Image (cartoon, rainbow over all chains, first blue to last red; front, side):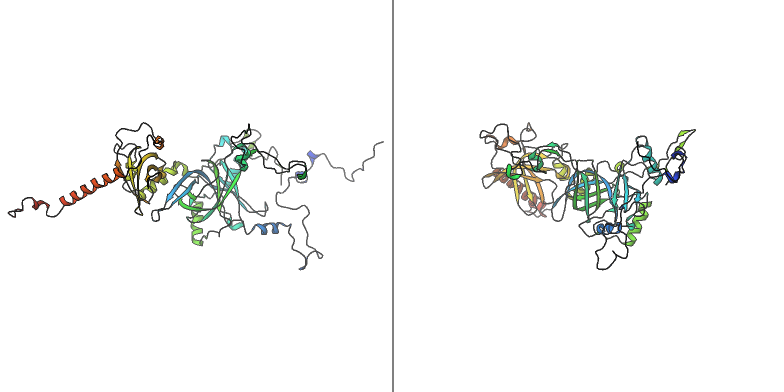
Length: 299
Length: 189
């Protein structure tokens, strides 16, 4: 005979008759531990180590490297060079154009567990945007955007007003930025291209093995197997690459141009995330400049 | 948090159906203002590097008096050095337009690239034009001994002598007393 299940001490009506609040199980999204360490008399003492798996500790860990203010989205327009008329020096540079960049929404610690600015760039025809996204843009009073990206910031002071337009003037000439973009995809690349293997001789009797990998490792002594992580042919490129500490050579606010030194990943026309360089001192924004920027941004 | 049901989905009316969601107009587009940023940057730089447009004219495709591939060019640099050679290639890339000259340096064939708009390049002169238009854009065949021009020093020296003569003749003719020199015997003006 099957075991008799214990009967509940209260019989509930069917789910469709239950009140909504009791039934809703949508979880609150945040950085939350299921078993957060709770301070009590026994684990709270100056001699004990500081609790590290708390949201406060997590944010404090990142506080040093998180930028103070948001970044912007730009399109890579191509590369050219800037000549210094005085010294005659030629500096290769990449031209990035900011097009209709707006703050769409904020991420806050109270609601999401961290601080971030959701930035949108470009424009997409409303017919081609899904209704959930259209509702999201309508809720924040911005036009439908083609590209939407988050820029994490240190704290609340780095959250500009929703709907603020971020122009090329957000960056200064002479400051350093990090540029993140998806590199050009190389497809299924061989060992020579992907890892710089030397290949084999072109002649001297070599048969059909000019660009091959060669050996994949030692034999019995090295585990009788190919070790995990062995460099081999495979898909190369098409991943995010960060170019750090690029100097901003020129800023053209009217045309929305930011000219950075050196090269940026990706083909012409790709989307680039620009933010203040993490490994350089934060750019100093004076209070009256900040106010002017805020006024310009909301205008 | 309330779960959205049929009568709480924003924009949905059970009688009228799905409503249009309000869309806001986009901010002004910089992309529409500046469609070719690289061309804009090039023209901005050329106002300082080539204000008269002389260098651009010298290598312009429209100009019949332009320097062409196959001509012998003399490049003078800001530090005083100069180099002369046959122009094998004119690489047009906006501000990075460059010419490839093949000349001799101490009896060794040398090819040099010169950025046409670089501030280091003081001047570019056409020493000798090619008689007939070269039948290709890149004259890499000049590297072969059969076609190699070799040293252009003689041509350049001759050109410089002619220029010097013209300059001195010009100077003499522009002298303050030049109009009195012819008939000076009786002191006529």
